[in-house]
Length: 311
Image: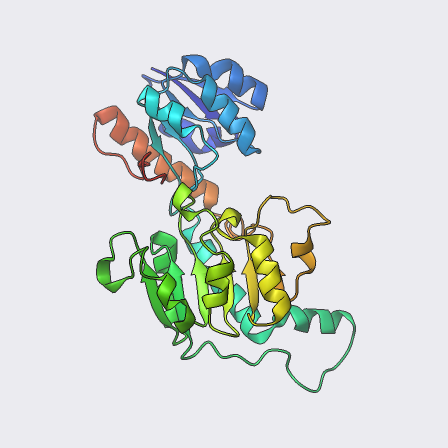
């Protein structure tokens, strides 16, 4: 059984691989492309999403593809589905780090710590605080109560934030996708934590922004394409919204001349939330080995992507 894995993962997983695997290790994009054609099992994540997608397209014999990433919107899903390839993602690997980053962003927004840092850079000593919001007794809508969304909710509960979630099924008292829009005006924080699918494209547009509570903040730790950025800039310029904490934008990297950089009351974190940890690769390796054992034994695997749902 032929397999292809990244050379960077070799020290982590090689000691635990079964001898029946015929393993190749790639160190760059060209090597991955050259070797993936014969592989039944592959983990081919690379620095650029388009590189990974190009390699996957060549994996015509793949039966199982593993990825460290939770979002698979850049993958050739139709090809994988047509081939009958199992795709497992990295949902949960970055969940703790992203949840902590979300709370950090909300605290920074509430206290306008971005302004505090700039004041300190200017060596000034202000007579008043630039941000005076307390998280206590505020309300938050979390669109996407998966692993990350639930971890965010758990952490916000400790601050006394009243949280309402959104799920496809409406389980556990959450709102369904057709119900949350009408309630936007009730929340001080609107947090996007849903997976990227066709249904989530520009889910926050001019209509939704106009429906939000005056002074509310938009927090996006999901995907940039979930927000109509032109509409967001327009809404921010009116001063009606409190602001936006954006870990994700579109495109990425955001061009230096993009007006979103200078839009009022925006805090950017350049998609660093999932990278703000030291355990990502270790957790990815552990998950991969668990799934490898299940695959070899013909047992159910973790984090299998539903191609129709998109996650």
